[in-house]
Structures are given as structure tokens and as C-alpha cells.
Length: 80
Image 1 (cartoon, one colour):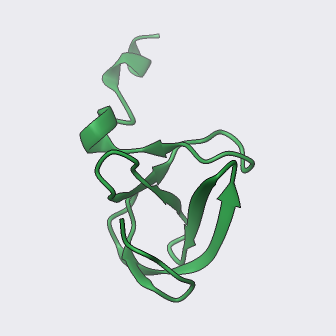
Image 2 (cartoon, rainbow, N blue to C red):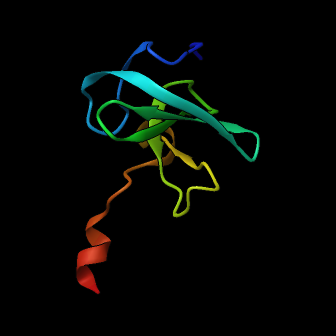
């Protein structure tokens, strides 16, 4: 896991863009990184990559790594 600070360069775990960290906050013991591309990321506890924060609320951080947890979006949602 990298040590990121406000202003650090980062690659967004959602859109893949080169961007920078605009804000860092701690939510329930996990750091959330708000990026200049307007996405919130966190570090995957398994592999250490910067990944999507998949939480439904701003009070929590739920890192979702496509490599460790599988696809975030699935085709199953279209079958409903």
C-alpha cells in the first residue's frame, strides 16, 4: 500500500485516469481518498491497489477490488 497525501499523484481505481488526491478522510478505521476525477477510492486490503469505494453511504468505506472481489457490475442485474 502506498502512502498518499493530499496532492499526491494517483491512478483512479474506478476510471483509470491519472489524477491527484484532493481529500483524505477516515471512516470506521479505513481511509477514503477523494480524487480530482470526482471518484472516492480506498486501498484493497488484499492486494494493496487503489480501488473503488463501493459503499452506499459517505459514513462507510467498502473497498471493492475487481481482481480480488470480482466484477462490480454483473450481467445478472439485467435479468431482473
